[in-house]
Image (cartoon, rainbow over the protein chains, first blue to last red):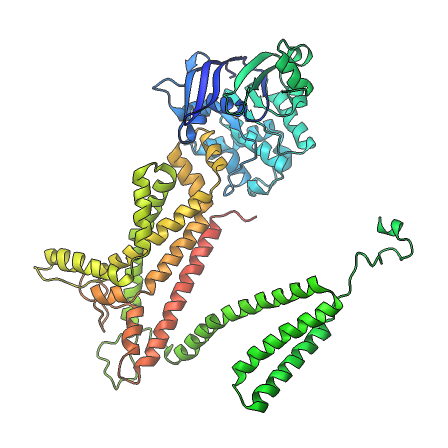
Length: 258
Length: 360
């Protein structure tokens, strides 16, 4: 299920503004990789290039090569929707579809991609909700609106929605930044469970979270405002947080940045 | 905290946190005095009538209440009271014309609101006949508005989707500019346009070379008026749908067109329907274009593509200026019917929009 993600010389632009420059990164399958760095350093931009969400914004474009198990996802004949089905994404703020019930939210990806059979949908919904640690809380009210859940539940609903389409890679863009510590813990536990079957890449501003959940950590930074973000160091999380080889990494992680 | 720093007061009685409230009796008293003084001035001195008295009383009440509240509660509370009173009065003032219109319609329209009105037309009704109804006008309004809606709703919503979701660059700017220009077209101009284009140029083609009025031509003129309203309101509603919802759907591998159909439109639907209903209400009330291109008639004409048709607003216009003493009551009832029709449509549309939304 899980696949390897390889970025070679990835450069992304918003119009004429270069947001990230020449990122080379190798993400191992069935692992959690954390992207850390100051605001505006291009972590999220890089994350969004992996499932081709970057190009949704007007004027945005990507150069370089991104492969998923040696398949170039920016090749000319690649179907963008197929890429996004293979590489799911969880956003910073929970974004359940407001007009849909909990059940409809979870199976939205399947249903909107043509799966009609009720039994298939029901099975997929239960499986995804169980994986997302949400089943016990919502199993009696699947017909209620998804927007009526608490913030933490909504975020787990979005995770369930993402894994219901059985992607190979799951991208998470600061999934816990709008959540309280208990919901954060629930989602971190969930990541631990999910990495058995998925490749997970997470952007986080929370250093402790990166240290807790990830196997490998990548540190991004910008030198000055207006400069493109670049990858400073990428190593195992343990090495990054105990003895990083770059001074900049050490400064950032210990809180003495700049 | 306060009980610790000022222990001389009983708990919960710290005067720093509390202030005296003006009793309701004082305000009622001020109102009574204001009304009394105003009445004395108006009727005692014999100037003005009850309107002047009310205005004067309201003004005196504002001054009096300010003074009383200022004395008891202080300046800030007095200002607050004055502005609250002014805003509430503005609201009531704004309601007056609305209530007045509805009341006039109901009281004057009730006279002919009978079975005969809804079962006959004006065919063979002379100036001395007390009967006669508006079936032909109701049929005309329903058909014309339905055809206009059938044309403009798909077109308008599609145009808005194009502008918001797909359009980039000069072409979109151009479309938006022309939609804006269309918003300002007077209805009589829309009628003239359809008269010169459809009635005079196109209709002779299928009518043996003779120009022909039709309900369909009226529907076309109404479409010209409805289209910009629908495009603009739908556009605004689509823009209100948060971008993360679209991205959430894209991230599931849902194609863009399906995202728009299944996520964006359902989310914006209540607002879109409100915009559509506003444009339908406007179209149903238009008289001039119908008069110009459908001509009006006294008999029932079910076929909107052939021959003259009437409409409720045209019926009101013609009956209100008719010499027969039985005509004005018909005009009032037709006006009441028109308002009721639009109201019913709006309520049905709102219910439809709510049914599509999951209850919270």
